[in-house]
Image (cartoon, rainbow, N blue to C red):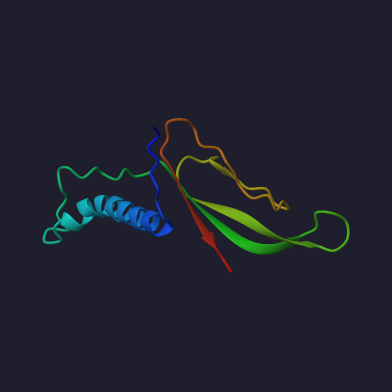
Length: 118
């Protein structure tokens, strides 16, 4: 004899809502327990945020570029700016809409921020 579990749509939605509420409560609990009393004092258990060896900002802006002969095509172009890091990490190509080439050596910590101009 087979046991079939019969669940209505309403029962399923209640079960799914309860499960979602439980999962969300487990995810937010560690953050809500933390005290804000000593928020500016570093904690021994808090991991140190490392400073990147290479720091780059990419700015996305609308431009027009002639990809094919005729009318220029509107494109999003990414232009890079090297904030910190070794020379030669960021190569830019004038006259190209493709953007900057990033050459980051192995084992260097790399951070890239993308800014969008509308």
